[in-house]
Length: 481
Ligand code: LR7
Ligand code: MN
Image (cartoon, rainbow, N blue to C red; front, side, top):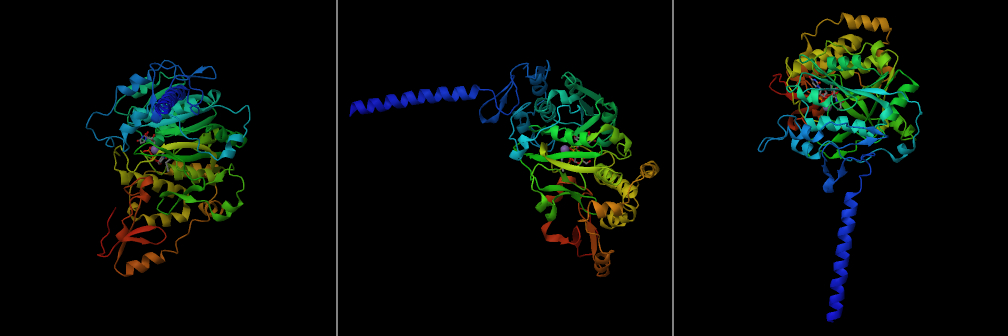
């Protein structure tokens, strides 16, 4: 009996020792999907531990050079007791814990990995504008690009620091090979900042990214391939979700495209059923009426020929409609490529200020888009957003001249050929009916809120569904939400 017990203890001890060795061996292997990183290793619980001055080499190319990532991140971290959401509207503590890189799941359809691309794809200039971005999210964006793209396709990364409080971010990041940083002398907003970045770009293809993204495996090749084949295509990836709370990387649905309502409020919507039924190849592009705005690839010559952006738009918002209408109506197309995936931290509020106020800025920008591109259909924009009436939006003479010069199609053409699913309101019938009853309706949405809030901000007790979402006040008073 004693011998049996002694044997059992011996076996258990040996098993424990072997198990421990196996665990340690597993743990010290280089991580698999972090490309060919040789400078940092994935520790348990998915956290990364940086070595001092890691030399990461991909295809013989030193990705980070001698940029001191550890010093960059550690010199600016959350202080004990500080609210981790206050400054960036996401959980800074979690972001900082991840460090400058991490492995993420390859969220593509398995058939994407067998796609092939031309061996002579042209390189691209990556343009990232930022205003007071957190160091960890910004560095992860840059590093994910450098590590998950074939080096020869990245001509340069142009950062445009939109007058952030600390000029050091821009200066230090310029030490990374291929990274250049331009700093605005005053706050310009993302639209003028992107134009500045694009003008400085030396590659023939432009790639725009937000400053809190992580690009996924082989994200770039499908987009450059499509633009190389036809320079009038403007393409974007599927935008995966990085949780603002725990920074989990979550796969977004591959069945969505960009849409909007008449108040010019962006929304993700299902691909129309007929198109969905006809899709037998999950790697095929998805035609989209509009793009979300921040993450896309476009030929530089085409960007310039089409009039870049409307540089009289301020800070944030509306430029995605203006660009989308312009691309479709003036001879190009927009598509989402399901084999390209980029993660983005979606937030519920803007973490930065709007010098002219959030609502007025969104109105100014969307009014400019509506006045230049929507022809007689702009009446539905004003019906859906009555507060836009009479608000200043500056001169649009230049943009109207551009539209004439490019000989663009009408908005009616766009509705018929690109977005027939957008319902045209029945000549204000619903409005007059309700107004006659002494009630007041106000459009709800991006007046004071951002793009992402539509799903979070509906007040259940007071919602009326017409063609879009309205808030209903029985006392006959108009309120803004
Ligand atoms: O004044 C500013 N200056 C800037 O440089 C304000 C912002 N920015 C930068 C900012 O740091 C960020 O890198 O501009 C970028 C976009 O700002 P966000 O991240 O606050 O915008 P968002 O993600 O909420 O908004 C989406 O819609 C915007 C409309 O103007 C832009 O087109 C964003 O690029 C766009 N983001 C995306 O498309 C990513 C996917 C989100 C969705 C849907
Ligand atoms: Mn963003």
